[in-house]
Length: 342
Image (cartoon, rainbow, N blue to C red; front, side, top):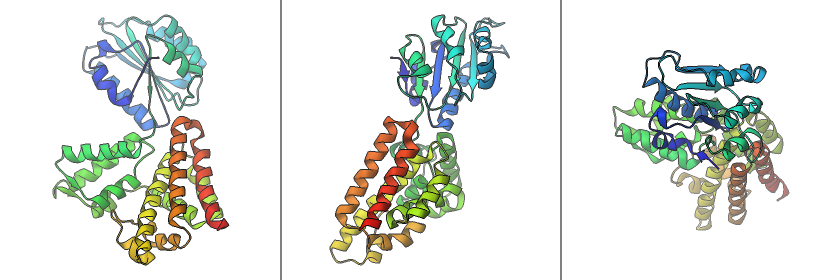
């Protein structure tokens, strides 16, 4: 099995000559797929004088005319350098007929990069490429919370910034789903704060916006308040995006952990409002208003069970990404049902 991770590209393939003849770049995070392709394209743009060294083809064209890809891959460069053939926007298209001949007879003077959507393990084009000794498959999953942490830390360190804890939490809430978009938002926030040397919650609120953030917060609140109808309506809108499921579960997990901390404070005599006010990092936005009400419906034991349920669902989305929307929906509706049944 020949695979590579997105962050390994620069180390494994420092120059165009080191690249394998066929690379399949696929996964639910289209922004990361595009970013990996761009990194490979830069290797070709850095060498050679052939203006036709990089050829971009639309997947729709290749699907209707599979032989076109073979012809392009076997065209010799005018200047003798390797050429790069990029098949863009292959999500949802059957590219196997076009790519299979290149696996049987790899091009000598070209590198073929094929972009695809989320492909099931052990089937179709993904299996063919992963089983091939000369080709490489690069899976681009949705960023985890740890990935977002590393992204924030790297950008802040590059500009010499410190990041306040509440700013970090707020920023993560507004990221995820699309790696390239997340990176742009982090860079934008850090540049906004560069003159002060410190990224604050006010900076994040001022510069980072996401129309789906409030809807995700509303959906998580609805789950923990047992509002099934409102939750179902919000999920119908949010889960139209392939990558929203994991981001939604991450938001639910953060609130669940915060509620566990608040419930522990209540066990020592604090009121729900006081328990929420003393949380570190603090809750913000709608969660700050709804958390005291949520705590009236949940025991510490039930919150631990909710956190375990969300963690299990998040793990399931990694194993079966094609089912991520259904997995997230089921987990949040089960949480809402717990409130209704109590």
